[in-house]
Every structure is written in structure tokens, then in C-alpha cells.
Length: 432
Image (spheres, helix red, strand yellow):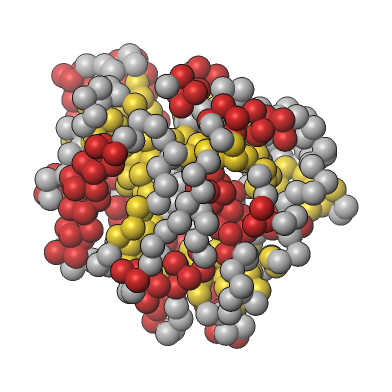
């Protein structure tokens, strides 16, 4: 079977890498891909981003399954387009993707279906938003309504920060509001606890949980600095105990799938619930994403032992009840190496050197460390940075500490000017 993976980040590299291990695969195309997917002989980059052109390509190449990685194409309706052409595609419809593409839709959905989440209000008028901030006080969380590539959330510790965030998201010709993220903000209560990522795969009726994971949103060690799209992740997440896992499935995941079906929007695809888990082990949903997380995907794919192509094919066909997932019992941990200036103004075109010579693509079924690419591209004969998050160095280990040590040992030889990475990825798991 020929497979098409839409996207060009670290998540898509990891998904394509895993799909290519299936004995049923003839070729995995990645559109547009990145420098890492270009280096893997089992993958082939396709320089197409237009959705109609991608559908044309899938028809011309007789693609057996298309997997949509990022949120942008999902929100734009790529799944609806492919289905209308009679093409098998894995991912949620445009209507279902509103769980991510509109935080106001998502929060209203959770309130309507009794899914535990933070108290919140939605505003399009800046004056009203400012008044609500003054009335509620800080700390408080300000979220842009639409897609913002993981950067549309401000956890304001002071009223000054909160008012500045409202102005940034709603005011004038700058900020996220002007960048198609919606002229609305969701303002919600600040929740105390530990965050975790809970990702499932669904076919509209059946849902299978993936391995638990936890990412690190802040730029700097000790969870300091600005929020980013993610500076690293590990799996499993010890905070998601068996009791917490059962609560999440019963109180959040299953009601969400049932609620979407009840609303006439059956959900197929990956569903990511960002959780806050309090000291008593009670989870609340911070947000939903309609795709796998990045960088959570990289450790999860390292641990998955099942044939991902088979799993996704069953999910796309509505027969997920025939599948059981098998996992490596070891920990996996990934460290993101980011560009100079990330997250505000990442610099491009810095030369990347020192990649381990056997990675990526060497004996992937038994790989204990992988360098997944996100913001890289081939320029002449050099590999250069092309985005904010450049690489995710991911490794397996018998413990979180062992996986951490192997990941940092693997990245020790890698160099590019201005590179940034945290040195404490996995610290919560190691402390437990």
C-alpha cells in the first residue's frame, strides 16, 4: 500500500517513520516533509501543500491511506475533501476539528456535555474582557480562540500580564487576533496541579487510548520562561495512575466521543486531551487537540510495537474494535533542540552538523535512539534550520532517568548556531 502523510514537522516525521515499518507499505510519501524525511530512504518528500493538489496527488498515485498530521489542514477541511473524492483518510472532519480550531466551541461543548474543565467566559470586546480580568484577578489564563501553533495561551501571573495578553489577542493590527486566530478570547480560571497529555485514537464509535505522556511547554529549565509549542516530552506519565486513567476515560474521553456523536459530528482520528490533574487525582480538560501532540508523538511512536498502518486503516474504516495496541514497557524521552530566537523570532538557515551517522532510518524496528526532524531542510549539500523547533532527540530506557541519559548523550554531538534545549526534560518522572 502507498501512504501519504500530510505535514512537515517532528510529529509527521515520527508517524511516517513508524508507518514505514509496516510490511504492508510500498512507499510513504510526506507532504511537504522536512530534511529528516528526505534522508530516510523509505520515505519520499512531496513538495505540495495545496489541499486540492494533495487530493489530486492521492488519486494519481492511488494512495491507500492518507494521514493528516497538523491542525491547519484539518481545520481547513482536508478530510472532507478527501472523503468527497472517495479517498481513505485518517483524521477528523472540519466540523469535528472545531474542538481544536475554536476554543470557544470546545469550552461550550464541554460545558454542554458535563465534561470537567476550568470555569471560563468568552469575549470579543476588549473592554469587557479587561473588566472581567479586573473582576476575577490573577493568576488567570488568556487563550486566543483559534489556532495559534501552541503559542496562543498566556498564563498571566499578574493583572498587568493579563491585560497585556488581552490587548495582544484582541487589539489593533498585530498579535494573534490579526493572524487569523480569531477575534475572540477565552478567559478561564487558573487551575493548580500537574499537566499531562492523554491521546486516544477513535473511529467514531470505538476509542483506544495511546500510551500516556507529558510534555514541557516552558522554554527554560525549571519550567521557566515563555510558553512554547513544546520543548520535550516523555512516556509514560507517572502522574496518570491507573485510577486517574480510568477517571479520564470515564469523565472526559468517553463523554466527548458520545457528545460529538450526539451532536451529529462523529469523531474519527487522534484526539488529544490536555489535562490538569489536581493533588487528589481529579482530572480536568484544559483543551482538546484534534491530532497528536508534538513533541509527545516522538516518544509514543518509539514505544508503539503495533503496526501503525494497520491501526490507522482500521480506524479510518470504522473497525477499530478489532485492534489491540502493544507497547514497549520501557520509557521514551525526547528533547527538543530549538532555533536561536525561538519562540518569538526563530532564526533560519543555520547549518546543522554532528548528527549521529546511523540516524535516522537505520534499523528503525530496533532503534533505541532517534533524531526526529521538525524545522530542517536540505540546502545544497547542507542541512539547515527552517523553523523554531529543529530536532527532537528521542531515546528509550529502562527508566525515565536512563531514557533521559541516552537522549542527552545522543544530542551531545549535534551543533547549530544559537541552538536552545532544556537540560531537565523528564524531571517530574525522575523525582517520583
